[in-house]
Length: 290
View 1 (cartoon, one colour):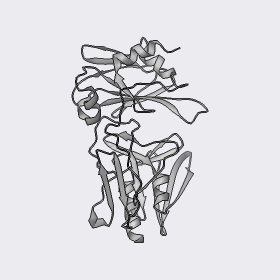
View 2 (cartoon, rainbow, N blue to C red):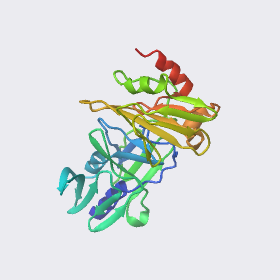
View 3 (tube, rainbow, N blue to C red):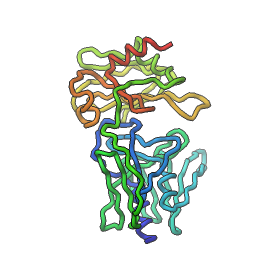
View 4 (cartoon, rainbow, N blue to C red):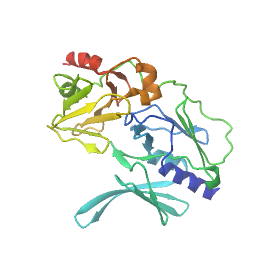
């Protein structure tokens, strides 16, 4: 049993090949259960990145009986943030923002690095076959990750039945609209199938491997296979942040496509709650912000 639980924990540290979109990096409504019991995420929520779902590692690890520790380690002038997960005398070492994880004496390379989001470290999930002694399943319709240690489940928690992880009731988060005003009022525009914007000062963003620089202007094609843009603003002294995913191709995401298949526009997703709307609609809403 101890070996089985350890193998399952390793599976949580690796990438779970979800049947989800390449349009990513938005907060999502994902339920994670360990032996039928729902894992609670009290602050930071799971999110998509590069066709993967990342979750806060602490809560899943502790649900499996593991000990989690977070340290800052200094090597010369470099400070590295590292998460240690210990289970049954075996140690897992995960440097933040690195795709290299040390599992015991074995080096594991992740498709998506461990990330620090807010106050939590996120890691990707991966399917591990029965031959490895672990069972990790993904239910697309219910957005459910089921992790089993082999323990008999007699009274499982109910699973929310949410057919779509996004909503069309687009909302601003109170107190977090500075980036919205700078992006969607007299900045972001679409002409001849291209989306163009200047990254505001104090904001962060990326598209694929391109990291944006504040004050620079960027242009992207809208259409099939063009992916997404991620834009965020961190507020000093606050745990939460303001963020938007700009989907340039909703056809690659079955949930976005179900809502916006007939919309010929970039789609904006508020990463705080998953609410989404076409860019032109979001720009009109932004004009009403005080």
